[in-house]
Length: 92
Image 1: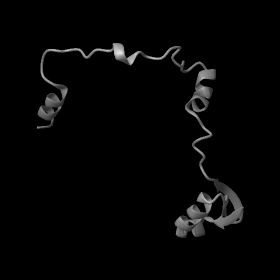
Image 2 (image 1 turned 180 degrees about the horizontal axis):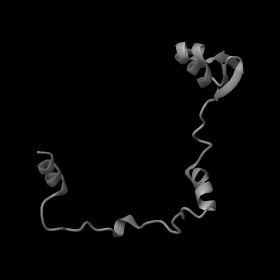
Image 3 (image 1 turned 90 degrees about the horizontal axis):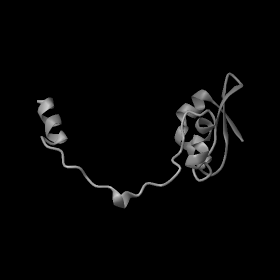
Image 4 (image 1 turned 120 degrees about the vertical axis):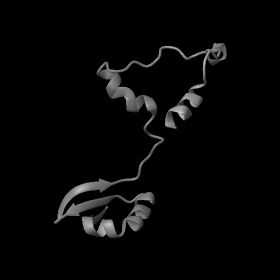
């Protein structure tokens, strides 16, 4: 792990990010005390379900119990102006 001060990281961020991309961890210090850590993000590890799990456990959200049949959907014809035309008129 590399340790670097805030000022050094600010002045050499690109260099430190290149090191993080290669797998190195950067410990950022302020006046010799650790304040943050930069680590490589691994998006393959964190799936959508895992990211939503805390909200599911709290009962704040519920995932759908079945998939949507997209082929059965139909567009509705609504009388009147197009929304895009109304937005353009409103901006004038």
